[in-house]
Amino acid sequence: MAQAEVAMVGSARGGRGLTILRLALLVLMGFSLGCAEFIVIGIQTNLAHGLGVSIAQTGQLVSLFALLYAIMTPVLALSTGRFRRYSLMLVYLALFCVGNVMSAFATSFGVLLAARMLLGSISGALLAVGVTFIPELAGPRKSSLALTLVYSSYSVALIVSTSVGKILASTVGWHAAMYGTLAFSVVTSVLLALVMPRTGQTDEPATVAEQASLLKEPSVLTGILVFVFGISSVYTFYGYVTPYLEQVLDMGTVRVSETLLVYGAITFVSNLMSGWLDARFGLRSLFFTFLAQAVALAGLFVVGSAMPAALVFVMVIALLMYLVSIPSVSNFMRVSRERHPKALTLASSLEPLSFNIGISFGTLVGGAVVSGPGIRSIGLVGAVLALVAAAMVTVTVRLGRKRG
Image (cartoon, rainbow, N blue to C red; front, side):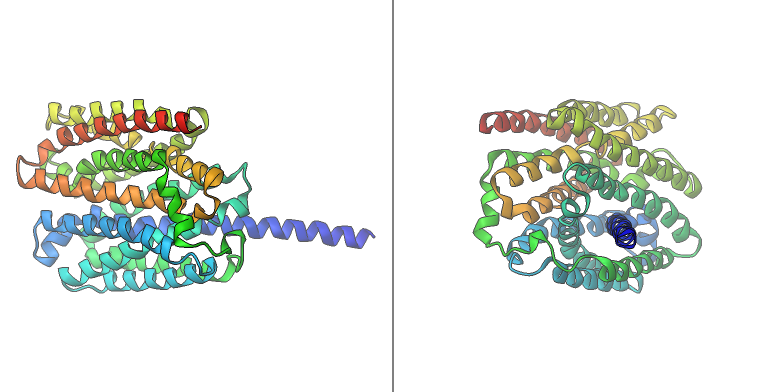
């Protein structure tokens, strides 16, 4: 009897250990996806010089990645509902590694752009499949915390890929930054393939119609617009943060890297605050978030190159940057659980969908501003988009109350 009890305790501990490992690997997956997405932002100037293109052209590496991410994530979620989740994850991991190989060994802008397009096409689908493991692994009470950690890993990736990548690109060459991203993606992919569960609750087949019914919910549609305008407002600036720091604030390579490091650290806090805001106030908290974001972005335009005021506004933007994440994700997942349970994978894909439409739109608008009025005006345009996001929050909250 005693031996049986010891065996049961040991099995339970081993099961908890495996669960923790699996959750940790999902966080590392988020970090790897973030590195692959953000690596070009910190090295835009180096890429422009090394590949013989303009700064505005390097913006395509961000905007096209985000555009395909936004388009393909829901398309893949809807069209692969009949396949097992683990098998899909393996296919996406393999393609993710191929895209990073192409990036690391690219010798022309065209090849690098093709690699970014491949990565953008499958990264959102990989994230969407990955986070569907979380409710089963963490349980209902801890799912919010696990989601927060996965999305927070993007901020850590932003810190590493933009600041360290900038140093590597300026000292060794931009390929070195890509090699690091490739190595981490391969290691993470192999570990995920080895330890993630082969079956689960979300393996039940779902038709396109059963999933697409989620998109008939008005509060989901307006919730997508909240995310799109909220993210695009800040990426109008952040998509060109490196040239902004270099050209407007006259920073050298080392100071730019240090600034990006601090910026990234603050965005990690932003992600953690996002979970806290969701738990305390829900989606309605974002109305005041976007008003503050509009003030900070407009402040950049007002102060111009005046230091340290400009740098203060930059860091305030970092603090507000990802507060939109968890309240919006929770809104999508809640509506799915309550009224469209077979659309959970699609619901989890709406975050990367909205996020990357926002990035694509924001960087395209930012590129137009950089090529037109000039880089100093990007804050003012971003402020207008933030006000639109605040209006969308009001609409979404009212629709949710009416539906409830």
